[in-house]
Amino acid sequence: MIEEKDGKKVISFGKKKETPKKAPTFSPTEGRALRAVKVIEERLSNLDRKTELIENNILSINKRQNVELKTINSKMMELEKEIGLIKRRIVEMAADLKNFARREEVDTLRKYLDAWNPINFATHNEVEEIIKEKSQGLNSPNSRR
Image 1 (cartoon, rainbow, N blue to C red):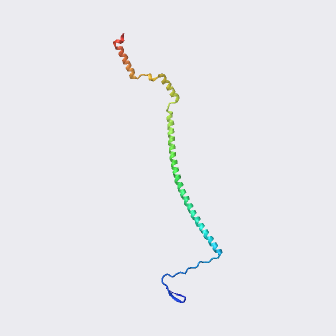
Image 2 (image 1 turned 30 degrees about the vertical axis):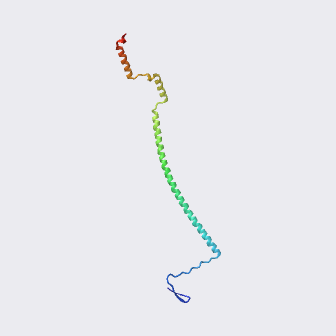
Image 3 (image 1 turned 120 degrees about the horizontal axis):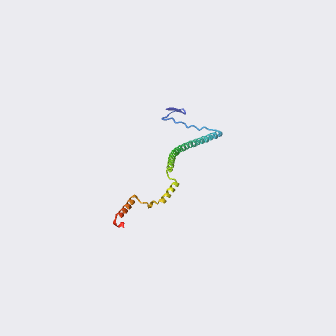
């Protein structure tokens, strides 16, 4: 590329060098205002990050609580089933208790058993044995005297 500088022709190769731009100059009031704007922008950026972090924390807490609620609900359902089974068993046991003898009935039976004293009772076989022995004793010649 051929350029003209200070009345001379100059050939340059490659990319044209850009002249550095001078930073704009601001009055002291404008400088303070720009710094204040930058500080506010940084604070807003920090607040955005904190807000996003809080939102993520709330979402994770919410998910955890949902899982815990589902677990609690399933445990409550299991407990309700177990309570139902226990109630049915109690009703069955109460019905069975009606078939048991009352204390008065047991006491009456005890009195009869004590009066009869079944330990002194003879079995059917023992009675037959005694009868045989007695009948043989009557039939023997020594017993007729």
